Structure formats: structure tokens, C-alpha cells
Length: 143
Length: 404
Picture 1 (cartoon, rainbow over the protein chains, first blue to last red):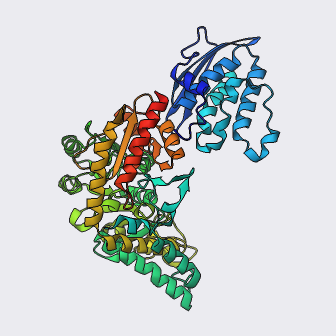
Picture 2 (cartoon, chains in turn orange, blue; picture 1 turned 135 degrees about the vertical axis):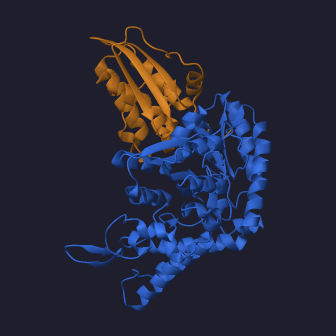
Picture 3 (cartoon, chains in turn purple, brown; picture 1 turned 90 degrees about the vertical axis):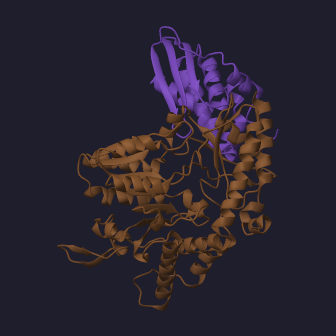
């Protein structure tokens, strides 16, 4: 099958079998991200303490990219301080949205493998929003 | 009808996409353009372009002539009683908004505009805006699970005599349903209502005669009819256009202006404020000539064969469900695949050279009615071949294997 490069095995695996799906107990914040173009929806619930993100779960209705992104985001930010979680979101979005020609300007310093798996999506401009939607919701939940 | 000869007239169809031959199955969103349309627009800009209805000079007269000839072509294409009944707009959306603003302003609070569950946002949102401005009531008549209009329910909505205007699609952009327009018109008129038909999809697939249909308003857009973007058409009965106030104010829509007041130009100029899409109107006229030179009989037979073929081969794809089973369907087929999101389908089809649309197709309430958030949609044009549909079906099988 041609053109499957944006579906890393990790992305496929998490879209089929998410590890962070559901609702977190004792949530301190919730937020929802909607993509009106396709009807994708990410509902986040998270429990924050003064140390940061203690727990986070998502209920995602959407494509494989969006499902996997929500799940791998939840994995990446669990245990992070609020500032570090937001910084991951900034780097992730930057990595996807920066034109390839300016690639050298992109910092990927803190991005774990689970987020780097989305890099091939950069050549699918119309699908970027699928990956960044959960992060928009996270930004709202942490605001 | 010789498909390979027709295809050779569309330069874009020989393109490769991601190294694969382009299989363009998104004509319901916008159709590709034949050389004659491209050339007629380029030639006009090269050799006979100026603003219209203004200059006394040769170029302006030539351009005015070309623009007005395009209007006449549209009038005969739709079977209008006169060329003055043809108003050029930007697209169908603007045509419907024009009616909602102008005819809509003549409606009284409590009167009803009746639309259906399968309308494109273009034939829904303008009426919601009218409702919120003026206090009319907006009613929605249901469809059956097969995707046909429920005519009993339609009759019930009409029965209290409050419906002033029905606004319904002539062919659904999602389900492909061709609505029983003559019947809808007759029932609307029996209830004392006027009726607008959104012909954006329908005019591409079948001969339309607005007088035979008996409709009051009819709209369509150029870019789905192998013409350019930026040009659409509103047809309405002359007496309705005469009674309607203008839409936008500006040049060309007045017969005299003082600082105190203006007097409107006669129709259709009253509704065409400002410099219109001159080149695009000429391109639309050429597209209509081209479509008519092939003929709706041949087009209809070709598309019916394609649709039947697609309805035969697509259900062989594991997990695939076709959305709706209307009694009469044009060349538009929406489908879903179990455990694979329409956007993932569309991305992988694209990477294999196949263009389809995925999403809610500007018909969110219909998606909700069908219990779906999105579908993938394959739509066919004059240039579509059965081989392309086979390529679609085979690629869908591989996509299914990849994801499941």
C-alpha cells in the first residue's frame, strides 16, 4: 500500500487500542476540541496538582491520526509540570507546521518518540489539524 | 459518447498525483474544466476584454455583448421565459442568499420557510439568518432512512397554509438523491407556497426546464458544470424579481441616483451591483454550449452506467457501507468503512492518486440525521470511467487491509 508513511506503527497501534481513553477520576479540568471540518472531537479530562499533570484521559471521536495523537499526548504530558506540558505542545505544533525548508529552526529537544512519530504528517497539510486538535484542547484545559 | 476523446479535452486529467495517474472522483465538489472553457476565458482576456454596460468604446461593447450572450445561453439552458429572468451571482450560495434577503424581506413574522433534512448549508444557513432577522418560522421536512424525501411529512408541513416558501435541493450532494421536483412544486403551489429548487448538483446530470418544473426560483453554480468558479445563477419568475427589493447597492443596479434617492434599474441589472464576473460568465456560457453539444441523454446514460457499476463493485469491499438507497440517484455515492475513518480513507486514496471528498460535505444536520459524523464521497463526471471506479474499489480493499 502506497502513501502509508504518516501512519507509523505506533500511531496505528494507539488508534486501534488507546491506553489513555476514558475519563480521569477527580478531574480538576476538562476541555473539548472540535474540528468542524470533519466532525472530530476530543474531550479531555485531567487532574492537575501543584506539581503538574497527575492524570489525563481522553474520549476521542475521530480518525486514526486524531485518536493516536490524543493518546500519545496523554502519555507524554502525564507527570509533567504545566509549563513543560505546554512547551511540548508548542514544539509538537511547531514541528508539524513549520515548512520543511525551515526545518533546521525546529527544536525537537524534548519531544519523546511517541510525538516524533507524527513527523511524516508534515507533508499532509490537510491532516495537520487532526494531530494538533488534542493539543488545542489541552491548552484550554490548562489555561 | 467517446470517453477517451472527452477525457483528452481535460488537460488536468493527464496529470499524475503522487506518481499515480489522477483518478478524479470529486466532481460534485467542483468539476474539472475542458479546453474550450479555459480557452474562451483566456481568449476574452487576450482580445476582447473591457468593463461592460459602461464604455461607449469598441472593447466595452464587445465585452458587453459576450456577457449578455452568456445570459441568453443560460436562459435557454434553463428554459426560462426570458433572458431578463437570469441573474448572475457569484455561486449558488449567493443566489440563495439573494432570495433570502430580498424575497425574504417581503415575508411576515409567523410565515414559514420550509427546507429539508438533506440541505447543503447553503440552503439552510441563509434561512436561519432570515428567521433571526425577521421572525419567520423555519421548518425542516424529514427524509426517510433510504434518503428520500418523506412526501407525507412534506404534505403535513404544508397543510396549515403558513408556508410561504419551500427551499429544497433538486439533488442531494451527499446521498445523490434526485428529488421529485415536479411533485414538490405541485404540492407547494397547492398549499399557496412558492418554491426554490437548489439545482447545484442537478443541472450537471439532467436537462432542467424551469417552466416545465413550474418552479418559482432555481439556482445553480458554474464550477460544478465544467465552468469556472465565481459565477452562479439565480433564475426566478419575472414578476417575483420585479417585486423583490435590490440585494446590494452600487453601480449598474440603478437607473438614476441623486443624493436624496435612487431609482432601481429594471431586472436583472437591479440584482447585479458592481462589475460582475464578466470573464467567468463567458466561461459559463461556453461550458453550457459544451455540455449541450454532448447532450444530456448521453450524459445521463453514462452516469447511470457508472453509478450502477459503483453500486455493484463497492459493496464487495469488506466493511464498506453505502449511505442511503434513494429511489433515484445521480452520480454521487457516500460511503463509510467499519473501523476506518473517512479522513484516513481519503488520505490513503489521495496517496494513490484518487481524489474523493471526506467530511460532512457542508451538510452537518444531515450527517446528524444519518447518525454519522462524516463520510467519504465519490462523485462522477462526464469524464469518469468504470476503470476508475474499479481502481477505487481495489484501493479501498487495500486500505481496509492496512487498517484492520
